[in-house]
Image 1: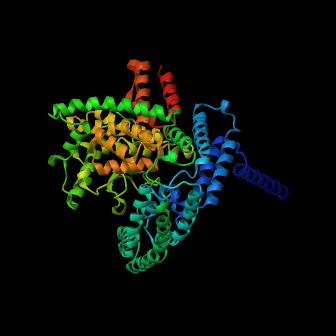
Image 2: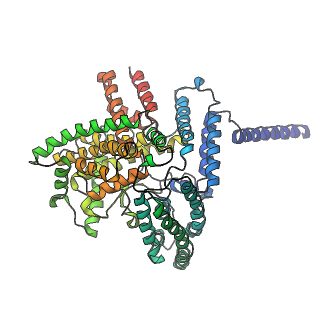
Image 3: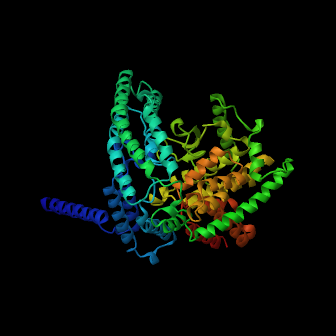
Length: 604
């Protein structure tokens, strides 16, 4: 009996040792299976990005080790992540790509493309502006705390307070990078510093109890209810929050303000990235990164001019049918957008009506898409207002993905700084782009993928994501959801807007157009409100190349659909085509083309 026990015990120890060796090998060396490596890469990145973990909410609550911390923004961490990226790419390339099946090869190719592209851009790591008017750290931090950090219990409220208390550390880390950029002669355009200073001064001028960091917490605690957070706990938490905002957050932001005040006289105008060191090479890289193509800036510019001419001709037909024949297309569209029948009251009631009407548009199309999609997301989408403190510099609309655990739906944010910027004839198209079947369908379906490595659920490729959203605008029209001529004009205006982006983005960064030249061109061609146009042009100046992805991506998806129709003839199934495009997750355009062709070959 003792001998048998000893043998069983020895076998157990041997098995335990084997498991330990396997774990050690998988953690510190090249894992035996590629999928183990893929998940290790994602987990390691996730562990170093607590704010991303809070946003995604992929882990159960008992594994929440991260909610009291902020993501490290230091130069040391930047260097550490760059070294990890190069090591991960080297490890990935040691796997036998030739011996993989179709699914495994796609996993390999997607990660290899992403890592290689990031490694190629390492030399341009400082060619950006961490404090900017659009999605800068100074406004992303309060937005994250207000919209992403949950407070459903006293423990989560304590985590909230802990994060507020770490604002000085975050600011000190960001300041390191700002100062290095200044030494490298990488300074933002003048308007960026001016607008960010105005935003930050207003942020710290508010009484702590009126700051979004406080008011949003009040809303969360009230929503949780007294059963979750008692009245006494509520009082104590809010008192501590007020102190943290006054004594921690505001002094930290004071350092940002002081730095930008001394930087402002050193700025050199409102220039594109051509004015930065190696600016021309950096922009070529930005075009490649965002479009996932080998198109040159000049090729993109010419595509933009061609598309603008085509769309302008289609808009002209509708405008003439409306009896509008004089002036530029943009001027006539602008005239329509100012008509009383196209506007809401610039009041709180008018703003709420806009939100309600957007929600109705999204809910209506969601019910009518059965003939076009087999796969639908489980999670819904909600329309909300852009937080008031960032309305002045935020884009007209944007989308935030749902939480992985289902605790938060997808959110379509609409900027309501001025209801005069929201013309009714353009609302359907915007709702389809940001909500259904655009960003919400694509991102929520990607998050819900099964049988794929975790990185496939979260990896973003701009041309794919934005190309799909723009394609969705066209699809909704094809499905009959923009039957009214003015609704179709709204769709064409939105497509014109994306075509103009090809011209002005390359114009400012490659051809040295001025900010004012780009604003004038966009006004002439799109008919958008001037406030929107200015915000857009200034967006492109701080996010070079990103705006190119929409039209390039859409054109590729339409090209793939037309090619599939041509090759399959009566066998072509639109629902199946959409499944192929959506159920692989976000990917570079070349890999999407290969995936669609493989599907076509199987159908044949």
